[in-house]
Image (cartoon, rainbow, N blue to C red; front, top):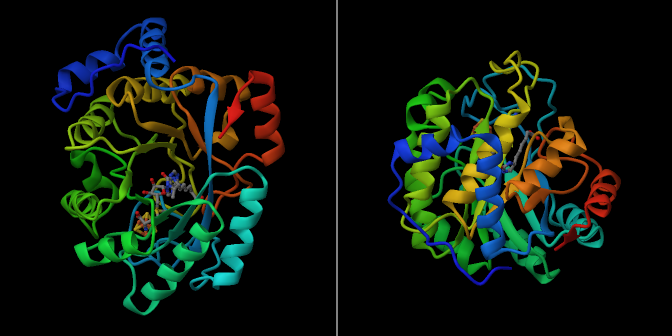
Length: 318
Ligand code: SAM
Ligand code: DTB
Ligand code: SF4
């Protein structure tokens, strides 16, 4: 780690961010890797495991999502999992080396009847010695506070794309709803996990505008997942053309430069990426992954594949 810290800024303009995206690739990667080294050990990657604890029948119509009740996908809906099933999955993730356990529920917002069960799940996972993260949809201030009191570490709520492009992605809630939840997460003193999906047909300016919103929040999200769209059959985005693989590297590099002290997670889409592309993403400043055979409803890389890749790259997992 270098001693010189990079300043944390909250006043980035769209032009400045667009200019970063348009830099020659080598210059961009050099700046991102230099920034990365100022705050982090460049040979360490944090491992978060994911579990979908409630599957499908979601009232929202997010165009990328396999779990929306609005689309006919192959997914089998499942109610909220039992505590014991969640504990078993978390114990396995811990034994494989994960340090954080992230749980997702396909809800617009948490259901009152299930909320106490969620609090029990968080307490039990904390007791295993894992960091906890949940993503349950929109939260009000009381819900955020109760999650904090149960010992929750992180709340995941992605802005996903720019405010302008978000209107093409969902009609059942607004960008302002997402921002309000992020405010409530901060007000409860929870750590924030919020990031992007790229490859939904958005333009470079949408990627820049999304990152501008995230970086100019009063505190940068501690964790920034960068997802590449996984096209799911039956969803409106099923036939979306694949992006240029260098676009995800650029997106990670710009995110690293903007948020020098945040963990940046190379998230959905790794299963379709080559080892070389993933390595470029780590050079560009990604220092966290979702680890384990499944994301929420789709396949991830296997634990064996990831362990082999990290061994070839001399990366220590934490
Ligand atoms: N219902 C909650 C919400 O909307 O925040 C939590 C679950 S939602 C599935 C969590 C995140 O997963 C989304 O915001 C999106 O970033 C990501 N995601 C879902 N489906 C995806 C897909 N097909 N490809 C890439 N990312 C996806
Ligand atoms: C995030 O940014 N990505 C994760 C997690 N947060 C909840 C979800 C990825 C989902 C990919 C599609 C699926 O498996 O359903
Ligand atoms: Fe999927 Fe979450 Fe949107 Fe529901 S709110 S459709 S679970 S992304």
